[in-house]
Length: 423
Ligand SMILES: NC(=O)C1=CN([C@@H]2O[C@H](COP(=O)(O)OP(=O)(O)OC[C@H]3O[C@@H](n4cnc5c(N)ncnc54)[C@H](O)[C@@H]3O)[C@@H](O)[C@H]2O)C=CC1
Ligand SMILES: O=C(O)CCC(=O)C(=O)O
Image 1 (cartoon, rainbow, N blue to C red):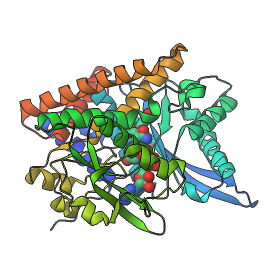
Image 2 (tube, rainbow, N blue to C red):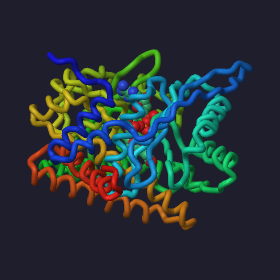
Image 3 (cartoon, helix red, strand yellow):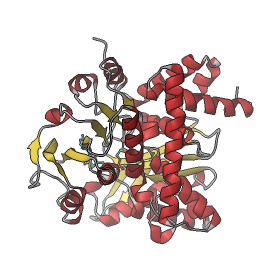
């Protein structure tokens, strides 16, 4: 058997190549899109609480800014590396095209386990990232946001540092801020809200009603938890949640009668358990058993490469909605296609987060703020429109949803690069 591609940059390049070839585009388009336009590597010195100095590795990649400023989150995770950040920035370019928002793609990260830092060290690290990067950021240049292990507080420290260094009170330089300081209502929940909308539309196309559908979700972070909340509001039954905990590893909890969002959230976050190992209302099962569950919809909402070819062969779900970025490897994608398990791709499914980041940016630029119902209504319309666009291409060309999403967005970027005279 050929070795599986697990380098996310190689996966991303494979996806671009497939779209360029299907569209018969000029060779220069692939050459322009296969690598980011700009990558910045940082060494970030941080004074630790014990008086020592530790140096952290940081990255920011702007993949393509033909359509607009770079846009994409910043991840704090021990596995962050250059190729991962590059791949995540590629996916942002095409995600922004899918929803038609006027941005290019970017992504950043720091190689760190934030759990090992005190709050003061985390603040100094977040500010240090901006110290190294501020010259390359701006409301119309490159606009970061939260991703894995980052949140509104971290964005607020970063914006504060940016303002101190530049003297410019431009809070639209970063989105995902707390609502009390320039954040948009609805942003915190936006990715999960959007995943539920796409899951509902995708299920409908396959004759499944989200109301009453059995759903299993991997990851109970920002995206996973709010996906649970929103699919439950649509009437779905959450039968399993998979998580990862230091010193234990991966596991899942299962309840055939359904798990309840409010109870899960209270146990995990409000009571501060941060794991479900002793959760009283679910049976502890292995990750392997989680993948094999007989469910209607499986939603990976944790990290890349969760579903390898080996895992794909075990899956019994009727469909998969990718809430994480890059959770299915290319070989697994082929296996799922062969097995007739449809996949709603990440660049469509999880595009709700960046869509509401765009709304936040617009509100910051205007200095005029919307109600939560304005945000939610506009987001739902944007996501349904995006779904219809991609579904139409899928039907017209008889391709997978992923291929349709890439054909749609690579074509769009290629057209703008052509207009701008880049090839
Ligand atoms: N936060 C956002 O707005 C957006 C995030 N995403 C993507 O969604 C995914 C999740 O991001 P967030 O929820 O923001 O991160 P997060 O840091 O809030 O949550 C991630 C969760 O996944 C769990 N996890 C990690 N490895 C796991 C494993 N092997 N099995 C089960 N659980 C595991 C962690 O314990 C944590 O609870 C990432 O791929 C991210 O890039 C995509 C679009 C927007
Ligand atoms: O909200 C944003 O700008 C970016 C969110 C993000 O990083 C993602 O969609 O993967």
